[in-house]
Structure formats: C-alpha cells, structure tokens
Amino acid sequence: MKSALRRLGRPRQEIRRIEALKNVSFSVVQGEFLGVIGANGAGKSTLLRTIAGILPPSTGRVVVNGHVTTLLSVGIGFNAELTGRENIRLGGLANGLAPKEIDAKEEEIAEFSGLGEFIDYPIKTYSSGMRSRLGFSVAASMEPDILLIDEALSAGDAEFREKASKKMKTIMKKARAIILVSHGLSTIQEMATHALWLDHGTVMGQGDPEEVITAYTDHVKVKKSAAVLEEN
Amino acid sequence: MPPIVPYLADTFSHLQFAYQKARLDLKGAHQDTWFGRLWNVLNPLFLGVVYWLLVIVIFNRAGSGDQTEMQVLTQIVGGLFLFRLCSGALSLGAQSIVKSGAFVLNTRIPRLILPIGSVISAFLAFAPSLLVLVVMHIIARFPVGVQLAWTIPIIAIVALVSLGLATIFATLNVYFRDVTSFLPYMLRIWLYLTPIIYLYNFIPARLHWALYVNPIGSIFAAWQQVLFEGTSPSPSFLAIGLAWGLVLSVGGVLLFMRREREFAVRI
Image (cartoon, rainbow over all chains, first blue to last red; front, side, top):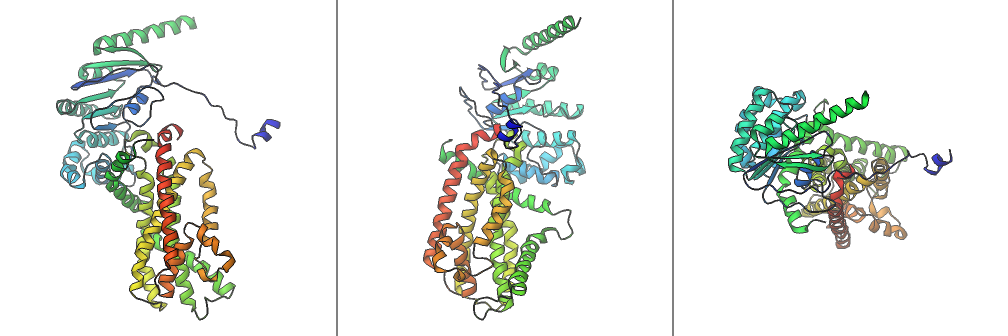
C-alpha cells in the first residue's frame, strides 16, 4: 500500500538495458548480396534498422555509401483506407521520387505486383500476401543503390517469391548491394554471395553462404539435442 | 543532433510526400460518414453557433456598440476557423510520432516530415472554411477592402506558430504520453484566453500583457482588426505574432531534431 502511494498509483516500472547487437563488425562491398540468418531475437531486424539509419548505434559507427531503400515490413506507411495505386504514389514519394517519376513507374509497379483490379481497391481489403506483393513492388522499382529487405517476402506466395527472386537478381546488376534477412535458408543459399549468422546480437559466422548455413543448422541441431537430454 | 542543413534539405525533399499523405489521409478520414469532408467546415460552424448561443442568447450580450447578432456570429466563427488551424495542427502533431510507430521503425525518412504533415493536414482542413467565412463576412456587412490581403500573412504566421507547437508536442508526447490527455483541456483554456468569442478591445488595459504572452493572442487581435474593423493590423501585433512564430518554429524544430534519434527506441 505504501509503495503504491509512493508511486501515486502508477504501475511499477522496471528498466533493463538490452544489447541487441554486440561487437558486430562487417562490411558489404559493391556487388555483394548479404544474407543475414539467425533465430528469432538474434538482432537481425535491429541490424537492418541500424544500417538504414532508423536506430542509432549506441557505440561504434555505420558508414553507408549510397542511397538506401528499405522494405522492412509489409505495407508500412500504407494508409489502409487508400487504394493500392494511391499507396504506390505515397511509397514512391516516401522514397524520394518526384511525382513525374512516379507517374512514369506507376503502371509498371502495378503490373509487377500482379494485383490486377485489386490495385484500385483499398488496402484494407488486401491479404498479407497482397500487401507483401505491393510493398516489394514499390521498393524494388526504386532502383536502389542499397536495398535492405527484412522478411518482407515471407507472406508472398511461391509464384511471387520466384518473381521477386528474379527481380532481385536484376537489381543486383544495377545496385551496389542487397542485404536480405530471411528464415528461408534455401533463398539465402541460392541468391546470396555472402552470409552472416547472428545469435543473441553476436556474429557467430560470416562468409560463404553454404558454410555459414551449415554451421547454423548444426548449431540448431546441437541445441535441440541438448534440450532433449536435459528433459530426459 | 544530425547536421542541420542536410537534414532540413532531406526534409524539404519529402514535402511532396507530406502534402500527398495529408491530402490522402484527409480523404480517408471521413469516408465512412455521410457528410464526409464537409465536417471540416461543419465542426467549427456548429461550435460557433454554440458560442453564439452562449454569448448572445443566454448572456444577452451583443458585440461592441452596434454590432448585430450576425456580426457577432461571424466574428466568433471567423476566430474559431483560424483557431482550428492551430488546434488541429497541435492535436495531430502531438500524436504524429507516437501513432506512427510502425512507420517510424520501418521507414527511412526524416521524422520531422510527420509533424509538418500534421500542419499541412490542418491547413487543408481549414482552407475550405474560408469560403464559408467570405459568405458570412458579406452577409454580416463587414468591411471589404484591400486590408483583407493582410489575412494571408496572418494565416502564415498562425501556421508558423502551429508548426512550432506541433514539433514541440510531438517530441514531448514521446516522453510523456499524458500530453495527449492534457491537450484537450489545454486547447479549451487556450481558446478562452485568445480573443475569439470576444473582441480584443474588450480586454482591460491592465490585462493587455496576456495578449502578448499568448503565442496567438496578438495575431488573433490582428485578425479581428483586419476582418471586423476594416483596418490594417497594428504593426506591434504583427511583429509579436511573427516573433512567437519564429521562436516556436525554430525552437521546436531544433528540439525535435535533437531528440529524434531516441524516438525509434521509445515508441
């Protein structure tokens, strides 16, 4: 009762310091496609947001040479009451395109998304897969120097994921770099030129995608066995 | 704090985005209502009628000297329309960062564009009400002359004050979420302290200081001079209004830029 009075009825608060990334250091050079893998909570999304300049590092520095385009979540920045087409315009403007440039790209983006007549329906009528299609279509059409993608394709269907893979290969020819966070290890293995494995905010491995993925999957198997042994 | 000039240049390059977002958000806001965007005019109009009822009918008080009831109504509504620009920008601005959590965490644009968008939204909602005010102004037989051109810089100064307050409250709300609970009361008290439902020359001489310490006190007095007295605004009213606008907008933007790095972590 006394402590509740002291807090003036406010709920008890506890502040903990969490280091989402610790001693992470790597570079991505021109022409590189970096796949970032790791368990949930490893710090992958935090890493992308730090590179994008959204989350400032508390220590160290991030040096980015080039224009960054991000696809960090499905349908972000979209107004659900507006149509897909209107959100294409908003997405283009948010990425720094001029209205005339968006006019030139609008049909191309709408066609790539494969949404058909739904492009003129409000986003609130879309499924998560449809939002993913639209979000990727907008981001990929920006002709980025550096493209950061965070699991934004996971909601898309197989047909769109294949289409998106082809598009990313095209982007790779023009872009300086792509960084993709994905739980889809086969996507990373197929497309990435380098891989980075994060675990609890620490770099556990980086380099050849096949080697890093093997090390990661072995680690996961070892953890599962240890958990089973502990249960028994 | 990020380097000021590149940051402001980046913000400026996204002004089209802020404008289109404000325009499309406004379009979506009243989509489910029957009157739709007409509510942007109806809201202050109905509020004006409420205050007219209170001032004229209940307290049986006409304007100064020989003001007609229509003139008193026009004066109140005119003030409320302009106040709505300010209060709308402040209310939307205060929530612009906190309510855009997903946007802030996943999009790489200068966040200053969000409170700026709130001011643009408030202005787009305010603009159609000017047509209604013109009609009422003519019916009430208030003076029509070149002095009305002064309404443009007056509105610009109010927009500048609104920008400053929107950025300040957007920042404060990230740290103190109680701000949005206090805001409606603060806005109501601010409305009564500003010459809107009464003329500025009703304020006793010993309380004139209250007009100057209110960021919009002197500029609303200027508004009344131009619209309802048919004269050019007093230079001191304009100067004080502009000073408030510059101090609040520059101070607000600098405060926002200084704190912006923490927003993504705190929301």
